[in-house]
Length: 91
Image (tube, rainbow, N blue to C red; front, side):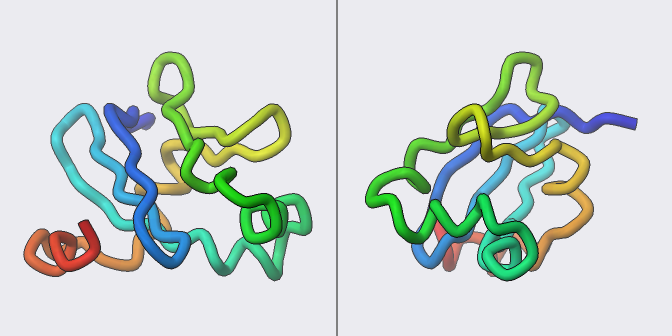
């Protein structure tokens, strides 16, 4: 089942704050992708690219450009923090 994304906010240290349409809030750490998917290294090496993240049409994922994207299910399932009080530490 798809849990679509309502908003996405880039935070410090390559962390994303995702809010889903059911108002669930998740924190996602992009850093592990730098070692597993070469294309994601451009987020480290291209100034300002990480901050350009946007929700794709329909909320089924997020993207930075035509080459870098993540699905809504990846973000929802591979979170680092689900506790709302800890989330606000990053926001």
